[in-house]
Image (tube, rainbow, N blue to C red; front, side, top):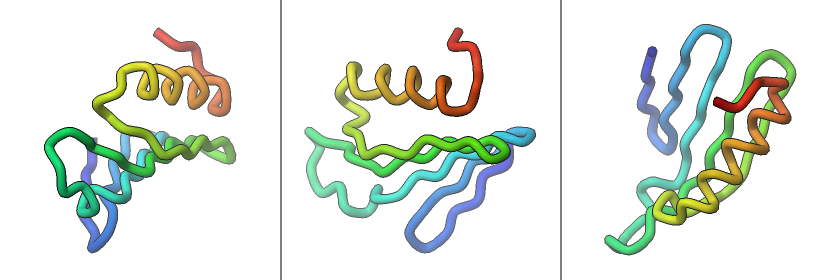
Length: 74
């Protein structure tokens, strides 16, 4: 997996799949890790803002991203 840290975002690439994380610097509390997360592959993508501490938000992101990218959720 390739990782690229830029000024305001982190890009993770694996094959033709790409993930972008924004907003980490805005988290000033230990109780919240709120980020803007995008998953993309080819022309498909899913983007959302979520709190990584909230399991239901992470699960919902994975489910919707899989649908948008045409992938099977494992």
